[in-house]
Image (cartoon, rainbow, N blue to C red; front, side, top):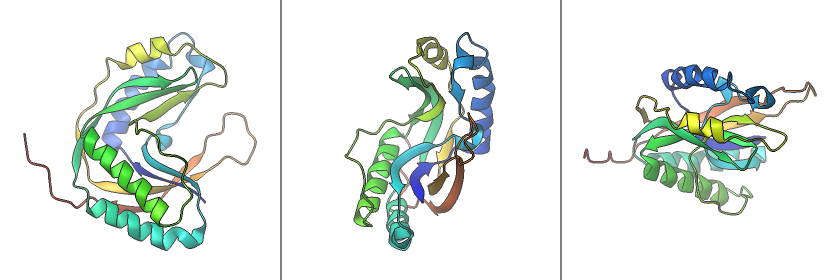
Length: 193
């Protein structure tokens, strides 16, 4: 099964972003992009790819430990960016150091559980909004995203998500995401400041 560890935004944050994205989808050139749907909006912490089901118990135990060692932290959807000319994303603000730490712990948990992980990448908090099969000028969309700042929420859990890839062959069909498990964040709360 294809798995990844993630932070899932609450419904209110998703709805808030969806209203903003409606405007992006009316911009010139938007019809050439494949827009992701609300069910696919998440912040990936550690992408594991294909994971043997036999590894799931130890992976779950180690992810639970990673969650327990990390305290809840504030986050909001804010701004955005692009990867090259083919992926448009919304960014994040708030407890980014905490999120980066949770990402590192999730990656380490997967490795220790025996999951073959790709090489280490510098973590960039992003929520994918759209992709393109061909090079596209995404700068106008990124410029618009600079005006977006969602309401703050508290990240209180780590999720393990299964990605079910499309099998129908229907153009534009998106993957389906299924939350396999969640663990509460439970480390000491950061001091207010």
